[in-house]
Amino acid sequence: MLRFKQYLAEAKEGKNLHLEHLEDEVLNGGINGTRAAINFLRSLRDMLAGHSKKSVNVTVKWDGAPAVFAGTNPENGKFFVGTKGVFNKNPKVNYTDADIDANHSSAGLNAKLKVALKYLPKLGIKDVLQGDMLFTQDDLSTETIDGIPYTTFTPNTITYAVPKESSDKIKKAKMGIVWHTTYSGDTLQDMRASFGASISGLKQTKDVYFTDADYRDTSGTINFNKSETDKITAVLSLAGKTFQKFNSKFTKDLMDRKDVVTLIKTFNNVKVREGQKISNTSKHTQELIKYVDVKMQKNIDSVKTQKTKDAKQKIKDDFIRFLSSNKGSLKIVFDMQNLLTVAKNFIIRKLEMARGVMDTFIRTDNGYRVTAPEGFVAIDQMGDAVKLVDRLEFSRANFNAAKAWDK
Picture 1 (cartoon, rainbow, N blue to C red):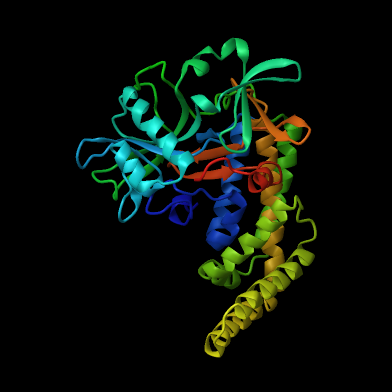
Picture 2: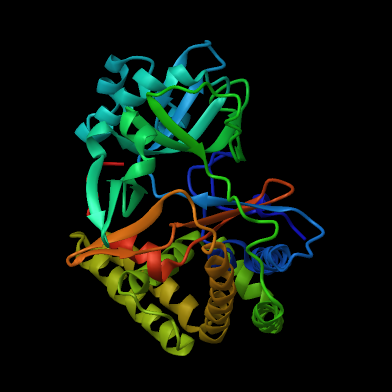
């Protein structure tokens, strides 16, 4: 089996800057990506059925924000904080408040990075860690939800709620963060990401509430029973049969046409935002072609010179020709994505059964409703990772949520 890191579009040069949804590996990786996605789900099934011969680790995706990079710059031995901009060609590395002012003008992000710079050095971080900020002091609230008093914070879309009687450590902290990735290398530009963060060596301080993203219940109490195992096995078997229908030339051509893949993902995300499940893949294919036609025509109409219009028209004609002449193959791709999503959601529902130290809610116009964690990241023995998120639950809420700060 080819490993995910051979084609996963999760990161730039080994950086954990973006992690793809498992079902999108059909688009990203073609034949190899689809095969690996199916095998990854089989490994997760075996793990949760209690008879896995290979280790698959699972971490919880916390809905924290902003993403924070912190640690010691190996090039000069200085402590820094930053965002993913620390890996830019012209890196935005912050050693002082003045650096933060120069690099990050957004008020919300600026303030949070200054808190991070003030308090994270107390942890004694030796490497470079990536985490998601959970809160600073002004984010904490005391609320009663369903009759239970909580200390709450909402870093992004999900509201995290800790029962008031067990939240003293959080209330005393100046900030909270969950670490999930470790970086190693001789320079920032050369650093490589390893999923998972060992926090046992970090110093404890009342000023920083920190944790790791490890899933705590993967080896016994949360397992598939025989009926559940049979159900997901049936879905994966159907995925295997659908895989045999793939047109290898088309999937390779699609994988190579990143512009087309981007448009397909964008269109699929439109459906996610609307909360629509893709049930009729033939109809979805037709709607995709219409969407691309309208979107690209608007682009043509927006330019003034005839020469530019003609050039853009040529690109549009090529796109529409490619999609229209491959309707059958596109339908099979969407069929496969649906099957992978069904199997993935089987696994997510089971993983969600392990309760953490915090309850999770989504704020609505009528108060709060209970929600699951954002999702999970599954990591195999070789360190390859894939994102497991119920897109119609969390991704839709995340797309439509008003962000209180600027990423």
